[in-house]
Image 1 (cartoon, rainbow, N blue to C red):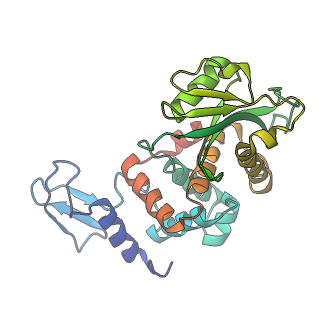
Image 2 (tube, rainbow, N blue to C red):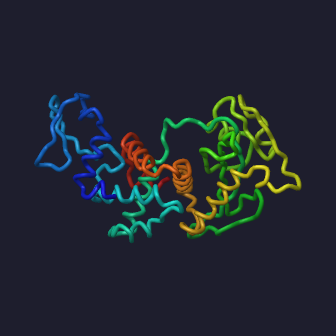
Image 3 (cartoon, rainbow, N blue to C red):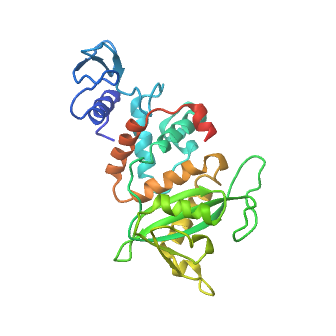
Length: 294
């Protein structure tokens, strides 16, 4: 993080990222203003006089943490291949309380889903799995197979490139394995005309404008027929147990979004950092109450 030695360097980079063609007032849209010397990282519009902090209206809105702490946290999150917990983040960055570190991580996770992202295309492996959840009162795990007891239900999809390598992925917490639920997942996350490769579960039969290619498991292991989605599920479960010691039910989609973000950018750490802040600038702030409610 030598590029960002202090808060000023971080704020300057953030301003260029937010206003690449120069300052634009968020109130009136005027494209001229000046940086105030009396207020750090604050601009004043030449037309309406509104003063705007570089962090205002972004995921860092009204944060009391130094801007560089946000940058360091984002760097750790996108470069940690195995994920990082709030407790680990607190220790590494010297954050005063666990609650602050936890909230910081969740605000970063909110910026990991681009509302304008393209759907998966081409050949797409699709399957579903169950993951044990962890709360104060609930059991750690429940029944096996497709039993819902004590489990979080997850649908997943992964692009398969012509050379056999995996591409982008999607993961979503779902309420059941019914036809309507799984069909909605497929249609929301894959492009029209894509080829949906499944294990032959009857719930996938009514997908519209996708070619369904079922591979009935039978006596053969599912990971042989659908290798990449099962690799994704295996890595996800290892993350859940190894880093977080079990996902919390209320925030499971945030953890899934983080996993998807890191997987899809696993070979492009620098662009992942830029993307995270780009989304965080566009999606805006989130309150503690909104995070807690999931």
